[in-house]
Image (cartoon, rainbow, N blue to C red; front, side, top):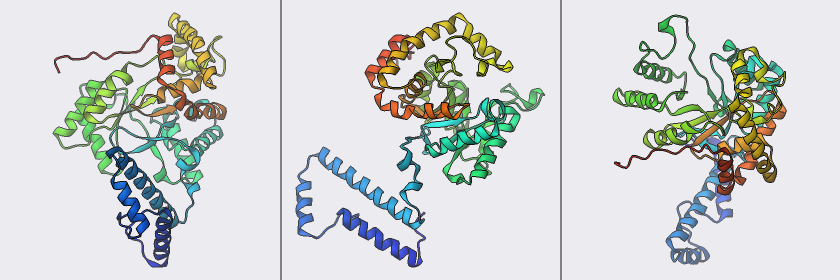
Length: 390
């Protein structure tokens, strides 16, 4: 990528690069003829294998830093243009695809084109982007397609580099006829894999994944892709929060190790149940108060919903001890799972989004002791059934 550097700018950057390497005392080729360096190299040669590994790691880190400085100079940029340096937002691989995504993403379900205005949507995206979020999720069905339009309009208005963003969308509803919707017998998985491979080959997408598929369906899609030399899915979008754990903690890890499928999770606050705002009923401005979310209201006022609210009250002292809010604790709890590539946040106000993004600071506090405390309160930790024949 950087091989085509010519002209005065290239020679100037090359001189700066050499200068930086000399200042650092590190030679890429590993050869330094000075007596001082020779003695240091002789001393390093007597290091233990672990010491040599640590030295090599430091050298590689220094080399990456030098190359990054060189690249920023080449593009006439400063370190302020790298979101990782300014925001501290961790990035993870999306499964084994090599695609790097921020560990927190912004979703647009219910909010964009529905619950909030376009101005608030723009404010939310700006806060997320400036906080280091590069993953934005939407879908064809969200607000009957309006969410996708709003998302694209904001990106165009802001002038953000498209190559710096990862946009995910979903297809589902289709038409009214049986042959235009659903995963029926007329929509076999082979056709889906073939269609998504065509989409990628045409340059309309770079990767494809699944949402709310079973482990068996994902495995079948992978097998079809391998059988017919097509492109397999790289991730599964799954619901994951304190009260929904089975799929992400038991089924998806096996798929990751076998076929490299990553996990992108949604609803870390269980549609707002974990936020605490439903502790005393259903507020008028909440999602559960909307007509199309009567199912959520029934879920909250049910006996199981009351039990969940009692468990949340028991979790509050843990959040207070860690110096965070209950939503921040819930999001950090999702992030503590290394099998989760990214957690999608849904917020209707800038204050909610800023609060949820603060879970990044809580993540280092999620020790095994804290996680065990939470498990003892929830009492819903799933256990995989081991096959002793294998």
